[in-house]
Length: 185
Image 1 (cartoon, helix red, strand yellow):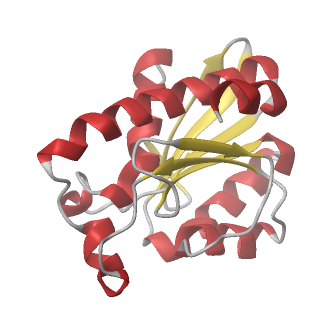
Image 2 (cartoon, one colour; image 1 turned 120 degrees about the horizontal axis):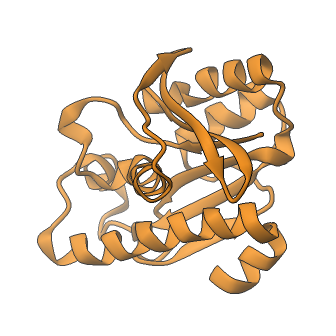
């Protein structure tokens, strides 16, 4: 079984922000695989189903971003999911807007949600799909940048990158992380 997690903020006012790229990717996977993410457990919305004959849980933690790992660890333990079968999707200010990067492991960087995931899982060994949102002009403006409204000129680029990220997750399930990295990085 795979646990596919999108990081985001559950409050409606954050639904169209750069910080919700993880949720947006989960929504695209949900639509394409016909897995409804509507059940609630362990402070998260989730849906269960199959993609390419693999059992999956699509997960959107409903905690604050910096507590995302708390619901992930509960799902991991309850469903006895191996770390190598956990895929976490999130926004990344260190990547150019529109780019995506897949990695089999790594640090949290500046992302508080990922810091929580690593702390709760007690490892950096799980797959990540990073969706580039670009960097604000002024570093001190990071919070407003990630949770502020997305300008119209960026929406289409981010829409394409979330589609690509969703396709990359399907590729990971089908052919593994190495093949997916060669195709999408």
